[in-house]
Length: 71
Image (cartoon, rainbow, N blue to C red; front, side, top):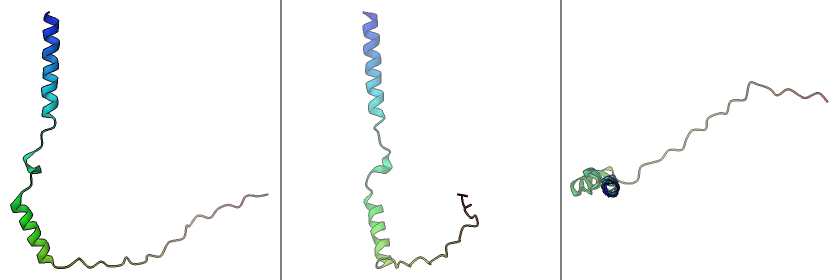
């Protein structure tokens, strides 16, 4: 009988511990003030950012040469 209660108590403790693992920090919530400031800052930046084309970099040739296999 005692073994049954011990097993039940251990199982209940395991269930409680597993539910606590899904808790989220309070920073995950949506913040209306932050969202408003973010939208204002994006509007202040104007249109889409200008993209620049990457410069073409010359490719360096390998300094090692392959040895030709004798036939």
